[in-house]
Length: 191
Image 1 (tube, rainbow, N blue to C red):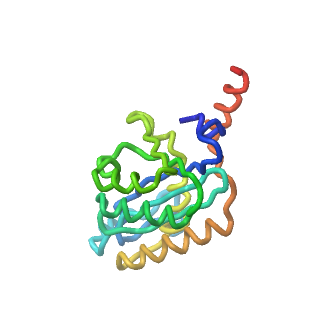
Image 2: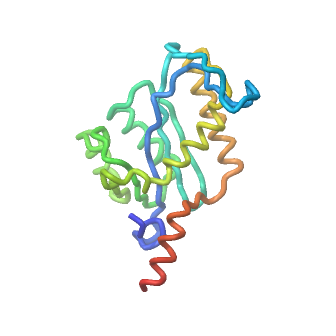
């Protein structure tokens, strides 16, 4: 896994980190600045105004991101998202880093992968989700899209996530995880 991040993976393959965030409910996402206190007000807003799953792809080398929202987290949604990833990075060989969720290994996904020989799936160890660089990026996206806002519908959540992704891509920079820098140093010392 670390080999992919430090450039020892397949030659000229783009490394993409894929994952899902959610469900993201249409509700109020409190922020400390509202109350002026250290803790936000403790009003409970359970939402129940709709929810979506945010599927995302992050290219750590450039910081480029792709997100799309779905009503369900199932294999049909995952295959549709893989099609969007392929449209976004059309001519490049891809190494897709993802977790071991059962919807990532269904027959539909295997049939999709058989159409694209230049796409390689790399599954994370089950006890190491932190190796997927999209996990810390979800915090950034949540802060940009949700923090301090109230949503009355799932469509508003959808629009906020799309706007936050556009904003991120305009301001993007290579996404460097500090433990990866440590791994590079350790790798150089070992070779």
